[in-house]
Image 1: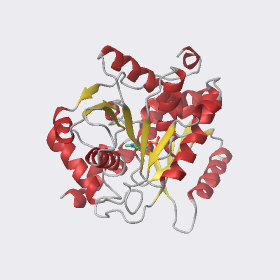
Image 2: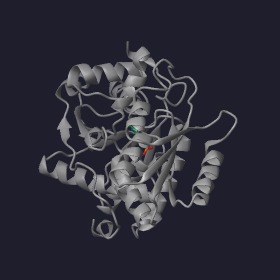
Image 3: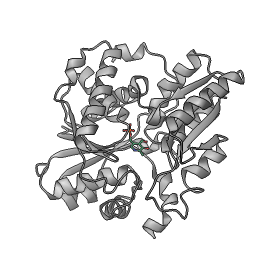
Length: 331
Ligand SMILES: Cc1ncc(COP(=O)(O)O)c(C=O)c1O
């Protein structure tokens, strides 16, 4: 991973995060299930964005930024971790948050990540219904510059080739852990949204010349759209790493059967997955990403899409703070 070490990075992740066996879930599903505890990355509750922010914040500081600006849904975990990173590095933080139709409403606007964003001192902008977040953000960036600030825009989910490097790093960590624990992984499964986590993991595996299939369970779009999104970002990440972008071919897999009616909208499969992991492993998933990702993993095991006794690693990408915004769903 030498090329990765030449790219500037701040260190904020509590790494390596644990890679643990899930004994009860394994027995339930007749597969050897492991979990990578990236819900425990350490920054204001943790989650996958912490790793991406190590590279994004370093880039912001290299560009003399004094303000981090980012975009997401009202309950964005990425927004919360960006607010925390900004606080840690003495930067201002502007969060542009969009409402999401179809989510439970009782606690959605004040609890969970929103409550933490306030505690972390972020300035929150709610995008008016008649505006697109991209237009709102452009105007905000100009306004901040006019005020004499130096804003740095982090894309939705921290998903560009710089942010993806966090998961190139994580792939290296996983490779060391499975070698140390003598695990031969057959599959890696994760929830895939803005694509940086899946693209970064794949780039890291390609960099190490290791071919473990990585299946992204879509949380907001069809499998074919997700494959396109992940592939494009994987190609850019490979290029940044000085590798041939054609190595992305045939490496990206996605399944779009489990996000239900849409992003952040609860469904019964997600609720079952969250309950099963909590009650069998003491593991708290989240309603928007990992709950749906795990619902996919559970169903694919039940349908025998994964061979019996295969070794599967689920990446817990965090988000459990979001359950507090979904109390009516889990009540
Ligand atoms: C908890 C959680 N899991 C998974 C994801 C998806 O990661 P990515 O956007 O890199 O695909 C996110 C993104 O916001 C998230 O917050």
